[in-house]
Length: 256
Image (cartoon, rainbow, N blue to C red; front, side):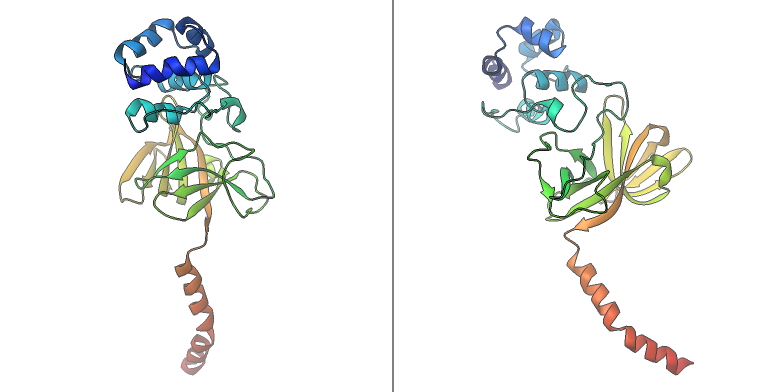
């Protein structure tokens, strides 16, 4: 028996599911498919949606379930509980055919800051944190504007976060942004320098790679509005520019 199937048996006991047939009923994943999971000791035959349904029935997030499947973690502790319907995102199976269903949603504005709902990988991949919940989710200690439609993503390997404002796809032509495209089962995000053209959305990610996406698959765009904390280099440059203003004015007067 694999580590995954041992955990599945144990987790079913923890959440009060007695039989595999019951798990199939609660999750919506067919009984035969679950038997295949046990036979192969892997979730590889499940679609992304089926993984979400299974994770929701077992009260864990799909990201941690996939980490267990991939061997990135050995076990998911009994005390860990994640209920998909309480995260500020669509509940399990709700309007799942809508391309915007699984795109990151910004929470309502709060006085305590801006929701920090995911991360940007070194490759430019924008990934939502499915553990984020309204009550205790991470935030950065500042609210931008009214806070509506605003969220932040943490830069991997950095202490800085990028703040975005959700806008319709047609409002951006070029600039730094996070683009979410429907890939057939979920909204996949990419961050970088974005250029929207009639037939494609081109994203040049921080690692220099160029991604040409079908513009018709773009479901949402997060426009960059700030970085937190602000770059010290940018602050120093602004200060130097301000301090140098009298000198530039004097030089201009001499030329005249």
